[in-house]
Amino acid sequence: MKTKVKFKALSGENKIVTRTITIEHPTFEVIPQQQWNGITFKETSVEAQVIQWLDSIDKHDFMVKHDFSIIFDYWIPKKMKKLNEVQNFIEFAKPYLARYHILERPFRAIISDHKSLLFGHHKSNETKMKEVLAIIDSCYKVALGTLDHINKVILSEKNVKTKNIYEYQIS
Image (cartoon, rainbow, N blue to C red; front, side, top):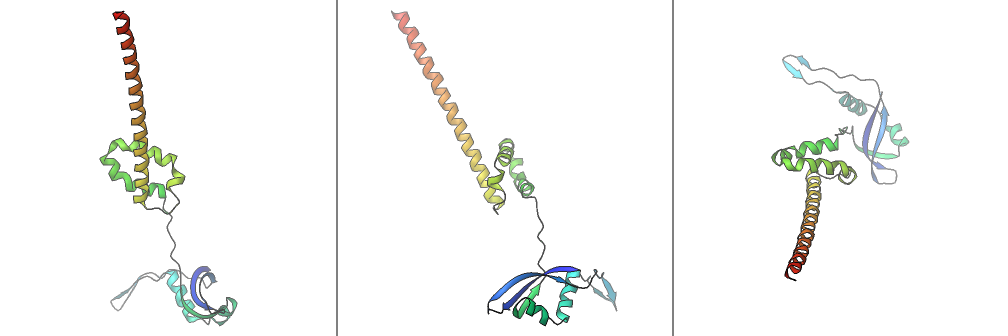
């Protein structure tokens, strides 16, 4: 069986290094919770058994192979759970969208159109929310500016036609 173990050690060049190395070890299984003399012992994980096994063996050949002078510490790195970043952000935003229903449609459209801008850059949900709201704000400003311009054009055309009509009536 193989397990990745992270080592912090002093290299042959007298530098402190941290390396993840795959270790081959005997096959271990989870030891279930046990009770003995009224004392309950927690289950022993495979990772804990690997560390115990490493503690018990001679690591001289291993140290020579990997150019370690001294091993300071070793541990099994925790596996990171990969969360769906988009779904996680949507869950974060649900309380805000529940309160302001009118933002839901533009919010989803912006997330869809700007995935590459929002996700995969190690941004917090708060930062993503600020960016989405800034885009919505900009879109609303553009829409209002366009409507205002159209309104001005329509009113100016009415005024021109109205003046012309009055001029013809006066003449």
